Amino acid sequence: MVEPKIAPSILAADFTRLGDQVEAVAQAGADRLHMDIMDGQFVPNISFGPLVLQALSKVTRLPLETHLMIEKPDRYLEDFAKAGASSLIVHTEGANHLHRTLDRIRSLGLKVGVAINPATPATILDPILDMVDLVLVMTVNPGFGGQKFLERTLPKITEIRNRIEKLQLNIELEVDGGIDPVSAPRVVAAGATVLVAGSAVFGSPHGIQKAINMLKSNS
Ligand code: DX5
Ligand code: ZN
Image 1 (cartoon, rainbow, N blue to C red):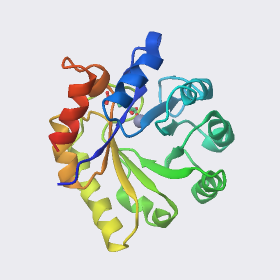
Image 2: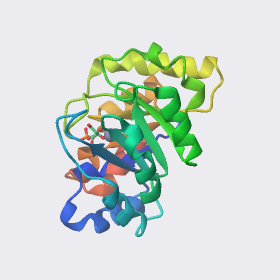
Image 3: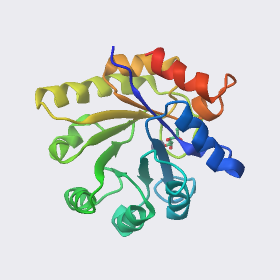
Image 4: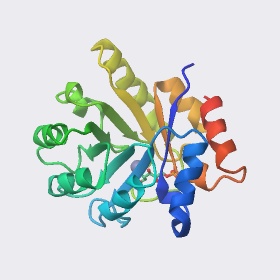
């Protein structure tokens, strides 16, 4: 099986020493950083905004993959681009004019991602699949780190993988929520190529290096 890419979510990091934590995941072989942006509207929680990306972009070479869990994401695309995002991921459920939003992300020169919640069917992606570089399948309901992996998302991952293969598209398939050494091999077997992990990286009792090794090699 192909080794998955690992995208640690800094939501689970120790914010009092964020720079060190980012350095630690970079050293441990993380492929990118996952930035969870929450506005207290699209999801109940509030996290952080472009200032944090701007600060981190000065201390790391890792790409800043930015997951926008916000209402009307169009309002902030440019701000996050300026702050150093490498890709912007918008939810089908939060963007009223998805084509336009995806076009705008592309025109900002960033990688284009689309995310779907656990209760959203894969078919919603059909009209826009060839417009994106990455599909993010939520394997928990977004809003908080440390939730339990939802098993019932597994067939949907495979469904999207099959669709990507059938259309011969060059798209990454990423999963987000409750990914740990137990769920990792299952989502990879289902067709995921990139794993977001917050608690399983920053909260691992084995330390960051071992945590990332386990997520990669277990799969
Ligand atoms: C959930 C976020 C996730 C979260 C993952 O709303 O989108 O990226 O930080 O956290 P864990 O890996 O702890 O489930
Ligand atoms: Zn996320």
